[in-house]
Length: 178
Image 1 (tube, rainbow, N blue to C red):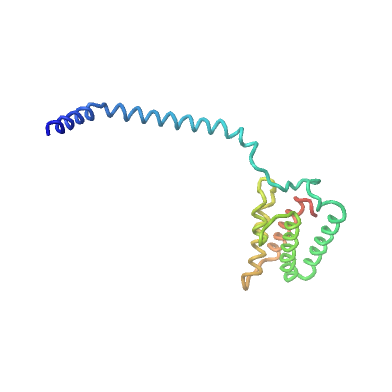
Image 2: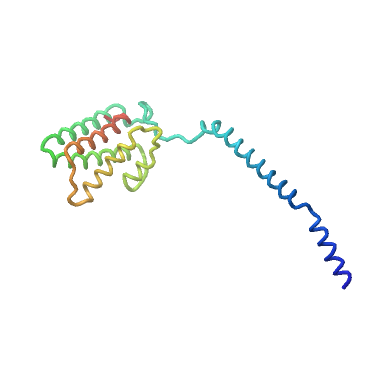
């Protein structure tokens, strides 16, 4: 028994003899130093790594994609012009039909650009908004088309319908189709 009590007494003296406050402060400053160096390293490396970020595969500048060249481009422009002329024939029904056709036309273009997805929204999500300034306008136009098709009794003013068609046209102009 005396050996066990001696061991317990020695353990108590050793345990309580340690300056725990100093150990705590040492560990605290160690982790603060590590955190500081990690944050400083991140701030230092981020600008250097930024230039290696992934780029959008389909850069829509002329000459990068072949669908905007030659006869393909003329045929696509002609289809778009025909669609726009039909939209002016008997508003507002012609405008609603033109929005639906413009959405289908734009979806075909996205498929020609080899963007994958089951629906047009899936293909639009693959486009990097840093490379395409009119992407938000395309989203807005697509949502309007979905409202026309899916919401019974959906009404849109002639001005809003024309603005929606302008949104599609702005996107198609930016990527060099029309």
